[in-house]
Length: 304
Length: 129
Image (cartoon, rainbow over all chains, first blue to last red; front, side, top):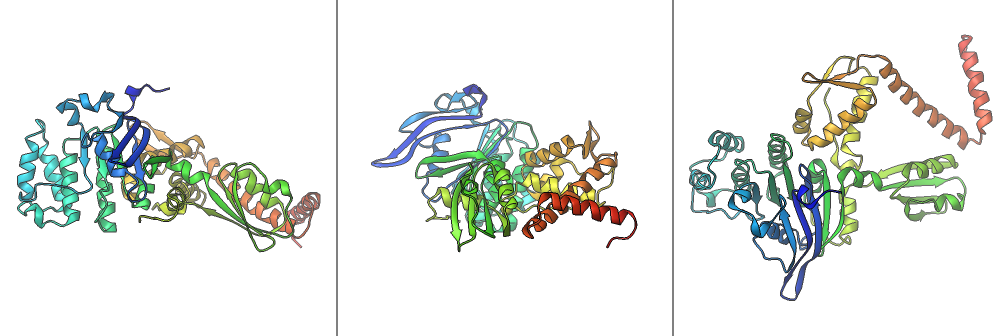
C-alpha cells in the first residue's frame, strides 16, 4: 500500500457545485509519480473544473487535494513553481509580444534557463516580436507550453492542449512533451484531451470522467487487452456452456448460426472454445479507446 | 528496421512492437548482434510513451530475443536458436490453421494425427503423394 505522500497528486472525495448544479460528484484519484495520466470524457464532464481545482483556481465544495504530499492550500510559491500548467484557453497577456511575456515570466523563476527557452522557441518557430493577440490559437498554445516547460516542473498539467492544432502540430507538440518528460526521471503529466488517438499513444493510464464522476481508471494497455469482440458463424448450434463461459460481456445473434461475442475477460479460453467448435467464420475485432469512450459516455456525445 | 504503430488498432502498442521485432528476427531483417535503437529514440520517432517502448524491450529480453548491455545498448541476441523459436511459432500457427480446417471437414484428432505422420513419413522417403 502506498502512502498518500508517495503520490504526485492525491485527490480525495472532491466535490464541486456551481449553485444547484453539481459539477464534480466526489472524485478520488491518485496520480503516481512518473506517470502520464490521460483524462478523457465528453464535453461538460467536469475535466476543466477538476483541473482548475487542482491548480487552486477554484474552491472545492468539499474534499481534499494534495500535490507532492502537501495540501494545496498550504503549498509555498516554491512548491507551485514545480507545477506547470496550460489552461484550456491560454489567457496570456495579449498586448505583450512573445519576447515581452518571456521576460515577464522569467522574473518569477530565479533559475530560468535562457538557452532552453530559445531552443523551444526556435523549435516552434515562434516570432519573438509579434504581439500575442496576433498569434493563432495553435501558436498561443505552443507559447504557453514553452512558458510552462522551461522551469522543468515535476508536474505538468495540460488542459486540452491539442485543441486547435492540426495533426502534424499535434504530433510535434506531443513529441516535445515526451522529450521533456524524458529529460528527468519521475516527472508526472496530467493531460486532458478529446484526441483519443493521441491519448492512446502517450498515456500510461486513462481516467474516464462523465457527468462529474470517474467511471473508469485503468492502465491503457489493460483497456486495450480486456475488451474484444469475436464474430463467429458456427456450422451448427453451439453448446450452451460455450455461450455461458465466464468473461463474456454480451452476445448478439447474427442470423441463425452467427454470433457477436463481446469478451471482457478470459479471452484466450473463450476464443479457443469457439475455434474448437466447427465454424465457417471466426474473426476478432479489437476495441479501441474510442469504442470504450462511446460506452462510458452513454454513446450520445462522442466529443471528437 | 523501421517500426510502425497503429494506435487505433486496439492491440496494445507494446505488443505491436514486440510482434514486429519477433517477425523481423524470424524473417532475417534483424540479425543476431544487431543494435536496436534506444527507447527514447523509438518513443520520439513513433510519438509513443517511452514506458511502452521499454515494456516491449523488457518482454523481448525476458523471452531471450534481445539482450541489453549496460552502457552500450540493446542488441538482438547472438544465439541463433532464438530465431528458431520464432520459426517454430510461425509453423505452430500454420498447424493450428490446418487443424481447424481438418476439424471443419469432420476429421477426428486421431485421424489427423495418423494422417500427419503418414504424410511426414512419405515426405521423408522423398516423395510426397
